[in-house]
Length: 154
Image: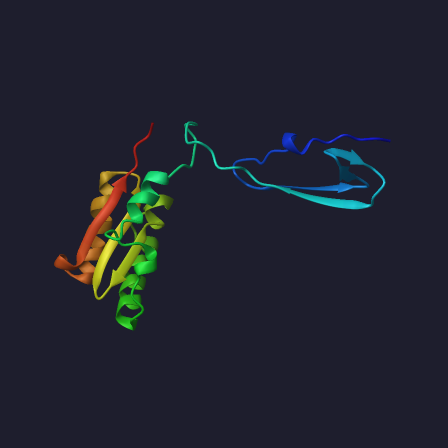
């Protein structure tokens, strides 16, 4: 039996690589030859051009973050005080009684030399205000830079 498989026709679903195990087939010149025993294919998505409304294109954010001015998680301080302050704020956000959205629970909390930067998307203004207040209660009123962004639905 001769099976033809075009690799270009294999796609991934929702950006997750699709892994196919094809038993008894071998690819030769873009077609399948069933003379071998086992072949494994891993197909990944190529980056989109950002025109799809469901696109995960965040190139503008990446360019903004590379400018050296904005704090990113790599800027997290390694002192025990910075680590403890970040942990304290994270616990307030995740384990608090505020029932924050998943997006809000996953914000970036970056502490360097006692200065806290909050980054990332939240669902609404209420979450933004509440998280800012929690961070200020832990770090001090003048030690928090709030760069949280309220999500906008297209």
